[in-house]
Amino acid sequence: MPAERDLTALLKNLKPQLQPGIFVFCTIAPNASLPAALNPLLTFREQEGTTLVIPLEDAEAAGLNHAFPSRLITLSVHSALDAVGFLAAITARLAEAGISVNAVSAFHHDHLFVPHDRADEAMALLQDMSRPNEAKAGS
Image (tube, rainbow, N blue to C red; front, side, top):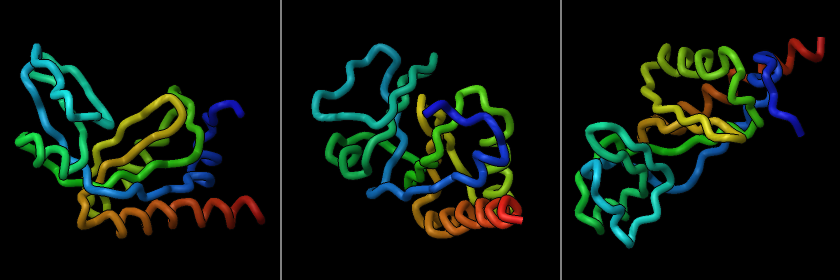
């Protein structure tokens, strides 16, 4: 199935899925090797260091400093990487509720890291975002 670009269709078909576990953000020195025991969900190299997103228990076991204990919400709609306004609409809605979000766009889906203690609220808001669109499409 081709990736979706239409904002209305993207919002209608969000299908958010809350993934198990708590994830944290860590950093290691720019030229440091990844600790062998770690299998990060995400790595990103920046000039100041390499960011790792890993389960909380892995960070603690490796003795890594960490920040932003979060839950991962996957938006199951197959969004195009060049879709316009999709994450803007989502992050604006979460911002209205005072929920911070770190968004990651991958090849097939967008993923949201939200504070672990606000994950249920974020899920409810995301599910609500698609309901009005479904009602409009049926009229």
